[in-house]
Image 1 (cartoon, helix red, strand yellow):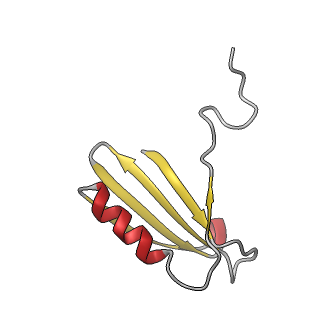
Image 2 (cartoon, rainbow, N blue to C red; image 1 turned 60 degrees about the vertical axis):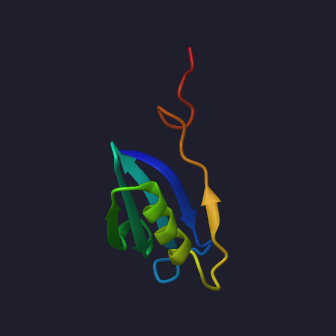
Image 3 (cartoon, rainbow, N blue to C red; image 1 turned 180 degrees about the horizontal axis):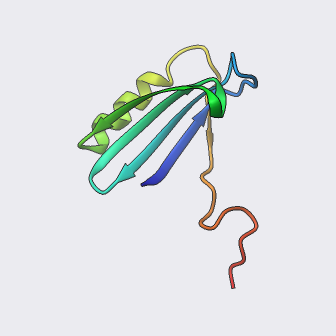
Length: 83
């Protein structure tokens, strides 16, 4: 499964932090909506097409939170050797 995008509401702490992840696996699109950081509670959505998945992401990102798109990690993680 490949992570395509990640959004964060810019807030720290278990009670305030929220994340939205957009992932793809073959022709299936997956969204994870997480509240509470890495150990929080997640809700999952699965779609056959990108258009449906992107519409759901737009709906999840609506509201007062100052959502920020985070860059995915490069293959091999940070600091991986390129040669």
